[in-house]
Length: 335
Image (cartoon, rainbow, N blue to C red; front, side, top):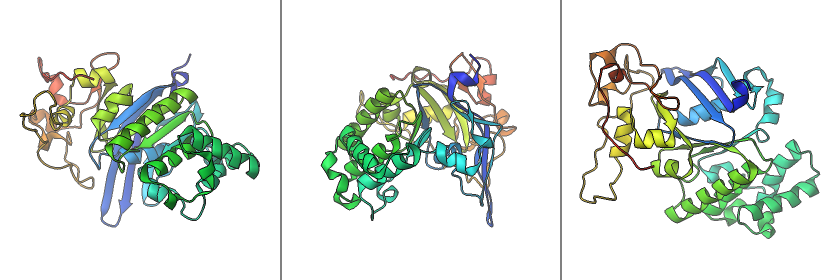
């Protein structure tokens, strides 16, 4: 089996910048992503880290202009996405790869029934008649826990959690091989979040779907992901299996994310927020972008941005401090 055939998704050296009147916004600065079949990757980081831009790049949805995308390789299930003409790419979206966007309020069209919006994808990709597509749409609503009889209702007649279920039904209608979920529970209360995550896990297993879960919530990552990639200022600074990143934290930024969480075992422990702010993507610092906020920064961090280096077969980190003999972060996490 070739290396490409091992992965549902293979991205190498993805760079995205937005060329605006105010300057060049360097959103993604050379990332690699490999995702195996039936795996779930958690893409983690603060707002502005580049997570959503990475997802839009995979779907070729970065607006141009002002967006400029450069990539050495982008394959989905062995298909060379970069070489596809626009009309072929439209066939891929929704069929081979689907995306669940952050806010269902803005994704759903208020003037069409939810059944019609699910049926549209089925008519385009499965070539079903309108009648058959509407019948399948009712089945998809049942699958996500909504009575099929509500297919003739409009988005405003559904609660926020129900709207998100409708969006999931649209995304999964054509059984995509890859599902990208961009903070799918952000606008939901905690109880509904748990229900939606459980639903997504069940449907992922039912359809043997691979998934990228974009989130800033490490609890969600621990619950649903097999692999983790931590992003900062448009770069992946640490990646590995869930156990690697949670139990053997390597990068100071990853450590900072964990330390900023409440400690359920010691409720009197003080939170340790990461000092400072994410750098301006129009004016990134030289060297490691995290160095100005890092407690371990040295002169070595101010040169070239550190490349990812493997510390095991499944775990890698981009941090100059690991070139110092004996350096490690003494933090243990229960995944």
